[in-house]
Structure formats: structure tokens, C-alpha cells
Amino acid sequence: MLAGICLKNYTLHVDLGFQGIKNLGISERIFIPFKASKNNPINAWQRAINRLLARERVAVENALAKMKSFFILRQENRMRKKVKLEEVFQLCAGLANFKSLNNALIIKQ
Image (cartoon, rainbow, N blue to C red):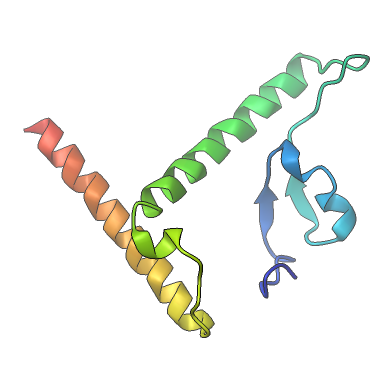
């Protein structure tokens, strides 16, 4: 349980900042990139897997950055009802998608 959300049924893709997350038992399916060290370098297939994970992660991070252009998501959350917070996220995601589509149409013209 993380911030009131049960993550057992989700697949998590995290970066190297979450090294100890597997020990917490949050989810069974957690993908963490391989970490190289001075005495234990990663091999070619581990590097390839790291690139695939990074490619997926950057798409999500870019989408979240677009959503954070809305001030309501940049400030501290004071909403008491989880439903309201979910609605705000859905609205901001929809507006971010609309802005992206609008920009794509303007560029094509």
C-alpha cells in the first residue's frame, strides 16, 4: 500500500532510485534497471534491457511533465476525496492530450 493505493495488481517500472522497493513487498512485478558497479559491469543484454526500460519510462515522464503544466498539479494536494483528485488528474490528462493534438495540427498546416 503506497499513499492509500494498493499496487499488488500493477506492474511497476522504476529507475535506480528505487533499489530497495522489492524488499517492501509492494508488488510482485517490478522492473528495475540493472546497476553497474566498478567491480561488476553490466553486459550487453543487460544494457539493452536498460535501454528498453528507459524508453518506456521516458514516455511516461514526458506525459507527466505535460500534465504538470497545469498549476493544480504543481501545488500541494489538499483534496480530501480521492474521487475528486482522480477527476482532476483525468481532466489535466485530457487537456494535455488536447494541447498536444492541437500543436500537432498547427505544425502540419
